Image 1 (tube, rainbow, N blue to C red):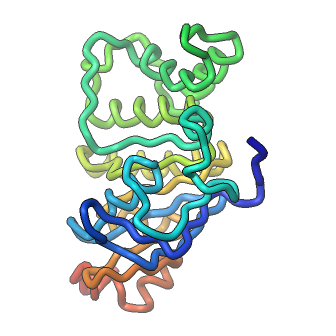
Image 2: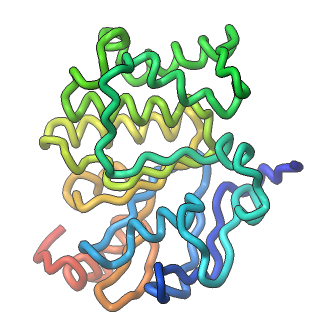
Length: 246
């Protein structure tokens, strides 16, 4: 497949939903090296939007393009080499060590035998170092704290060498210090790895000085995008989250 390197993600006149239409007229884009927060109260469609971008839900109308190409035109393998996803569901693998789990992220490149080349091993080692998992790599995943587990799952996703990383509520099960640490880490990863990260979150106070852009789904089904300062100055946090200040 010929890739257009100019764009990472473009969403045009998108309508999403499950059985029926939940949201429509969604228009947005993300650039490489940026961190975008998808926000809105529970039930407005954040997870549905992320799953639609991830090809887990069908598009109702409109288009989603990755690197200028409609996502439906990617083969499963091509898509896995471009987009990595970490959902909110708890991940239980008692029988795998941290390094073994991260190595699974190379599966889109290793073929059916799953044998890692020296280049694959180097990529995994680099990610383990970047995420700060060196002291944990031989521990079993089940032995880790929730914050450590989230880092491992993000490391596995990064092992896919994606151009777009999608995270659904990555801070859900974490305490405040772990949330702050993870969000700052994601900002560094976006910049250093030149990957576009889109994550859903409720943590207004924690993301305001970190993220590059916010996508806000309103209580009225509206979709707006802008910098944290732009969203705040328009009064949209107060309107859709019922907060007095931000």
